[in-house]
Image 1 (cartoon, rainbow, N blue to C red):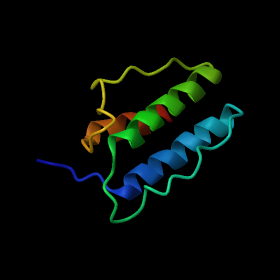
Image 2: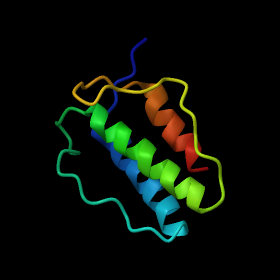
Image 3: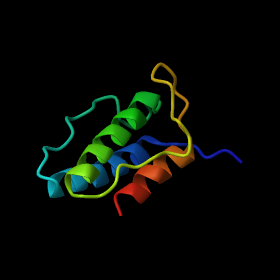
Image 4: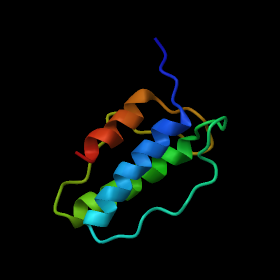
Length: 92
């Protein structure tokens, strides 16, 4: 089946990544007005989350994550449930 990725999923992932960033002494991600109900989730959202999560992980002494799917293409809106799940798992 298909899992619909919603803006709330991206917002929740951003909150978790920001918590990891705070633990690493980094600033929170800048606000992104493109993450809102009714707005299509973009691949760029996941690319940024992955980058900023790995930056924080390395800073706190954790290994950088390798992702099972090389990832979304920036100009697309293709975001898979596995992309969101890997970010969620990476902040635990």
